[in-house]
Amino acid sequence: MSTETAPETAGVTAVAYRLAPEQSKFTVQAFAEGLFSAFGHDPVIQIRSFSGEVHFVPGTFENASLKITVDPNSLAVSDDVKEKDRLEIEQTMRNEVLETSRYHEIVFTSSNISVNRLAQGRCQVRVIGDLTLHGVTRNSIWISAEAKINEDTLQASGNFSLKQSDFGIKPYSAAGGTIKLKNELKFLFDLAGKSVGSAH
Image 1 (spheres, one colour):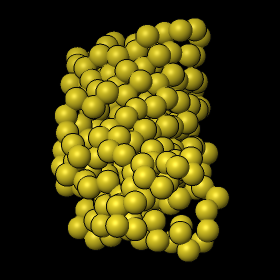
Image 2: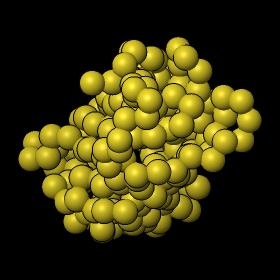
Image 3: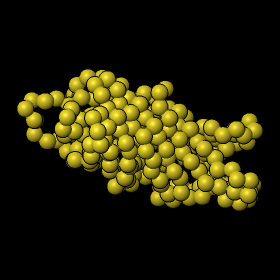
Image 4: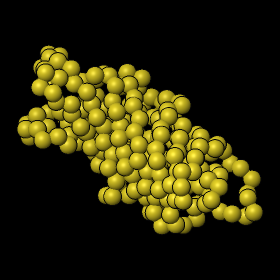
């Protein structure tokens, strides 16, 4: 279902749901190589600060759209690791990997959303859109999710994967390369949203 503007359907107005980070879970699963992998340590990074809205026409899902903005400085190691190691990983991630002093936000904007109803209030959603990360924009990023929707709340859970090299990012490496992470990252999300009424 394209997010391009469509004719009004019997005067029905789209509704908006604002994402609620405090009720959501959004993480990045990294995969280790080198010594990290020998110890079986695949770091999990928590995305703590983000905002976003979902718009669609109730019942038909016409004019559906999604936009999410992430603060890259909010990424934090959620594993049970030594505080010294946690600080080193987070500092390297912000300063050298994501270069947050140059690139202040990560933005995903949908270009096409299709919805397949599973049951009352439940549906399978496929979102295609543009992701700007580390100053690079990639088109046709696919995200699949299962959503639960009612008049007041929205919940969507799913996952997607990205390669850091597609965005000009050099994967994390430390200790002369003996500790490093693989190129591919897996994102897992369980997002909650609250209705904010009609979309404008």
